[in-house]
Length: 374
Image (cartoon, rainbow, N blue to C red; front, side, top):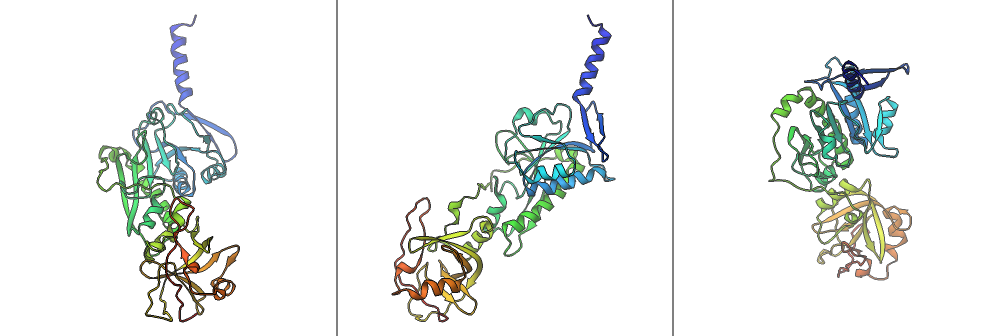
């Protein structure tokens, strides 16, 4: 039987082993160190959860801060999803220890968890293992745009002001935890979702680092999110790409293109076939050959001088510089190959809105109008 002294020694040794952290030095040698108790302040031992390029910006800044004189981060390890995701690639290139999700073997090893664009709910049993909880970088002014696609919905709705928010996450629901820090960001005119996301990723990374510098004070003064003003930002779906010429204004079509156009081309129906609309050119000013006849939504006009295909919508005309029918076409290709051959100016030649959730197109009565440039 073990003596009382031997039992006490084993308990201490096992506790040391549970708290042990392994690091790889630049020369490849393994170094081990441990801390018995969680820190009362920075530098912090962090476990980072993330996947995409937005998350990489925060991980990059946290990793670089380990050698900073400010001493915010003592150590950092990474949890990510399977596959070749940007966070995993960055972590491996920078010799950060990577764990596959799910991962909950964190007892005593970390002070704070950090979640950035991860997409998975952390269970309560995992959250409770971090003495200072788990922080999340969210690219909106919560409670506006809770959900997985806040940047896309910011652009889609034409918001002029957005921002980044640092919250402490809670189990069971996304984006509802108390706010620790928040910073405004003006949305530039004609900004795409990709451009805005890149700017918010950088701003969010610096806001996260600033929050970690004064985390105990931030936690002491955290505030619950108000229910007033809460909006949902669900994932972008392909069905959103169908343009509704009768319902959408020039500005709304522009917002839609800048929100999703780099991932999902805008689409419409022409002569029973699906057409993808590319290279949005903004609002067009069309002089009609017959000004007495009001064009109907979906009407087409080819502008020869600017090589633009203009389409009539709810409150004006919008232009596109290329489209895909069978192959990619310029407006000149589309006009020469199809439009100038039309036997008559009938509704059959209009771009037609497709009913959402249906494969049937909604026909628009009217006549195709001609630009004075046609």
